[in-house]
Structure formats: structure tokens, C-alpha cells
Length: 406
Image (cartoon, rainbow, N blue to C red; front, side):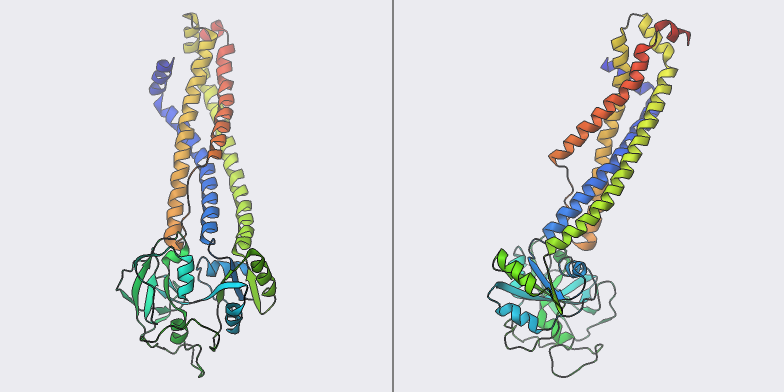
């Protein structure tokens, strides 16, 4: 029986190929939507895992998280500098680290921060060491910078730079291990260097377009208790306990500040993505229904064209069950091949989209199947088995004499 089915499919390979491609494309659409949504959800959750609480100026919590966790270029309102001092001295806080934006190097964001944040959130150094002076920098794992390289930052957001800081050079002294987050694409420098470059934290006023330098030999100061601090885009906070985290969020939710849990903001984004995924899933299901209807039409016509062949088989003694199995087996072979190809195509498309997203944003999207996906495969094949039974039953039920007369 199997040999007969394979021989029959080889004989009508062109039509078989069309059926397989129809099924594959319909299945691939649904698989790609599912894998991409899951990868985006898991990848973004992993990226935010190290950031318990973010404090910023009153405004949009979503943009605060996107800028702080995913380093999405956008101007943020500034926090009063004394907010960092209050958080650093708060007994409920394990550590508080400022982050500063505004510069870039070849579309790679330059982020001003502290040694504490790097030590607490990174996975260690692949090469080199921590910065110790204002002119030193640490490169993320996904940057194209090696130890000893010198970079000149551009003033402006990544992709929108306006001019170079002519008197500023950062020397790469460390390269971090991969974290699968957007920070892998960042160049991390001392926050006080960012302040000095932009003329902040100084008593005299400067035009915002003036070039400023820093003292390359100046030691880093990360004790903010007695300093006069400029405004800050955001502060990453590590509370000592879960209870402290909720109390801190409550205390800093009122203007002029806002405090957010990145996980909560991402949950709202997931809900939005879930709505979009539901729409795309409905489109995918609609495409599969149309393909199913087309398959029924094609197979019914195909069986009609083979009535004489089926009648001859019956006349030579082939039982009804064998005829049913022949027609059903051929259609199931085509659908099974289409489902397998569709899952492979869906995975490939999702992996390609994920790689493009990672190259642009630094966040790694895990693309892969989970055991629950097997239930979907079984349900799809079960539906296909019922679908294939329609034309097979027609071949089974038709009298031999009528088939030979066709």
C-alpha cells in the first residue's frame, strides 16, 4: 500500500507539490506568530530581570522602562539630583545607580553609570577590567570594540547624532560577558564623565552646545552624599527586600518623581502584544480554513478524475477498505509533509526576525518549541485526518459499476 501511494504521488508530483506548499504556508504563518510573540515576551522579561525598581521624573512609565532597560533612544525629563542622594542614604536601598544618556558611538549608545551597577547587573568581564578614570570605558559584549580601542562620542541620541565631542576620548579597558540584553550594545562610562562633558554639575552656566572635556586622571567619586548633583534621566534601585521595594515605589510615585517595576510595565505591553497576536492568530486560522476548503475541493476533483482507476482497482478485487486507505493515505501524506515543512518555515522566519531584532536592539529573543506545541501538532493532524476522510469516503462509497462507467 505504501509503495503504491508513493508511486502515485511521484506520478502527479506537480499537483502534490502545490498541495504541500499550500499547507506549509498556512501552517508557517501561525507558527511564526506564536514563536515570535513568545520569544519577544521571554527575551524582554530576561532583559528586565536585573532591574527591580526604576525611579524617574514624572511622565510615561513605558518610555522610562524602554529607555532604561532597553536603551531605546528618547529624551526623558530629568529627576532632581538630590533624589539620588536620598535613595543612596535610604536604609531600605541596597544600592542606587544613576544612568545618563545623550551620546553615542556609531549607533551604539554611550551610557553613563557607576561601577556598582556594572558589578551587580553584568555577568563579569570577558576581558579587561572596570573603568577607574573618567576617560575609561567598558564595552558591552555585542559592540565591535576591543580592549585598547579609543572612541569619540557623538552628542545626540543613537542614530541622531549632531556633532562630536572634539576634546573627548574614551579608552576601552574592559569587555563584558554577554547578557542577552540591550546593554550588550552599550558603551558604559563613568556618570561623572557624562556630567563633565555636558557641563553639568558645575556652578557656572554653559551653552548646551559648548564642548566640554574632563580630567582624564581624575579619580571616580561615587559617594553622592555631599555632592551637588545635576538632573538625572533615571535611577536604577536595588531594594533590600520585596517589602522595601513596594514601600519605595509608593514613596516615589508622586510628582516630581515616578517609580515603576519594569515587570509591571512589561505586563501591560504583553497585553497589547497579546491583542495583536490574537488578531494575527485569527488571520492565520482564517488562512488555514481557506486552505482546508481548497484542499477538499482539489481532492474531490482529483478523486472524480480517478474514478475509472478506482473502479478498476475494485474490479480486480481491491476491497473498499483498501480504496479508502489509498485515498486517505495519499492526502495524509501530503498534509503531513506540508505541516512538517510549515513548522520548519515558521521556525526559520521567526529565527530570522529574532536575529534582526537582536542585531538592532541587542535583546536576544529565544525562538524554540515547547512541549505544549506538540498538542497543537496533534490537533492539526487530527483535523487533517478528518478532512482527508471526506474524499476517501466518497471513493469508498461509490459503486464499482458507476466508477467504471465514468
